[in-house]
Image (spheres, rainbow, N blue to C red):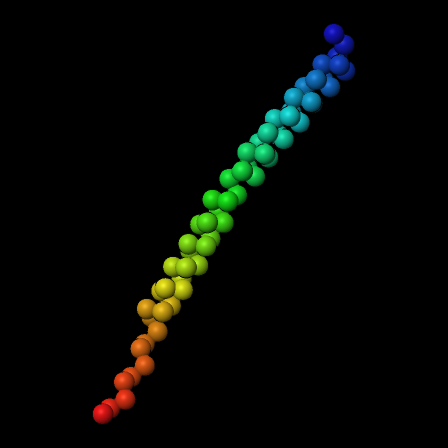
Length: 59
């Protein structure tokens, strides 16, 4: 086999490997979105707990 043909095959293999890695990385994205939503929910709950309750009116 010629050298240029071998280099082209190796290059195509590298491209396929990169494409597969990208595809797998895109599949894991929903986990990050869920993590962000849970994180912001925890921040909101923490802010509600840290805010002092309004004082009750004396009777």
